[in-house]
Image 1 (spheres, rainbow, N blue to C red):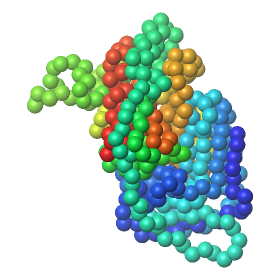
Image 2 (image 1 turned 180 degrees about the vertical axis):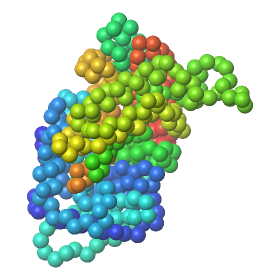
Image 3 (image 1 turned 45 degrees about the vertical axis):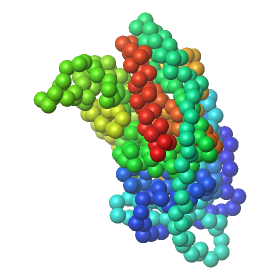
Image 4 (image 1 turned 135 degrees about the horizontal axis):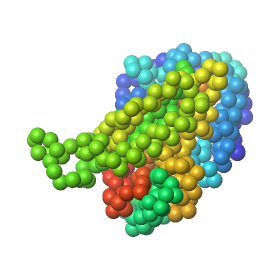
Length: 425
């Protein structure tokens, strides 16, 4: 674990502001873009006053301890008192225990909106007179990256097909029930990529997803891993996918002669089994930590522009006799079967053995924490890792015994479409 806290005592001030335009429009260029925005609400930030980095199986506990110690030394005045006000830390954790790069970033400035209310939080050194509120930064042009050239990443589509086939063979042999396997693609632009350009494109195209940016990882996730607010714990589990062009049979399934993708997905035994693994693993992890856990008897269909998923919303309440932090919950549930597999240990071992790449923070938790112990953490899906003029795109699929490797390759391509189109503009 390494940490770079502020070297002086800090003063945190949250004030209401008037905000007429989109949240993403206030992000300045080249200032460490941070975002957690959905349907026009959420928070964005820039600048940096403190940072935690960690690795290993204790990275969530280490980050939790660091955050609590950091918050204990703050002088906070919050005139808005909504989720996301006061000091916040944007979080992005690696998928695997031994992968480096898990990070918490505390921004110097945060701008947020919830409903009709907007605010700005600033963190400045303590001492001296109360500083005057800062004005919102002037909007700076968002730079497109120009023409993009794509190439295979560390796991090419043909290798991915082979890996999927091997995983399905092992499942038919009874070694495990499910594993989520991923591959990557590299895009190279003519000029350094502006993370705001990708954020804007994803937010326009996928407004019901959480558009996020933390330390160069930019994406739009439909999956809420954990939300904690006033003792209420919520999660949205996604597993099981269909997309336009993928036909489970050739028979029109509506009176107009069109194909009912949602109905085909809901009726797919393979996808229902994959989804059940994911929901059951999350519920089993949460039950010892929460009470009144509500798990839907059946999933619903969540439709996005590029794919549709089976979705289940799970909720419960913290037990006041056994309080646990958001990062404490995170340590208990990650990785769920939605992004790892089941049984958890067997799936993690298979991924490490055959996938052929370090995922980094892809499929890891991403979101924010606040000083009241709450926050929201999604799963880093539909994303790209930006480095100068290069973007590394990721996509993964849940593999079960009857998975078809060719179909899984096409599914991964359908999931990558979100980021490819947003990069292109």
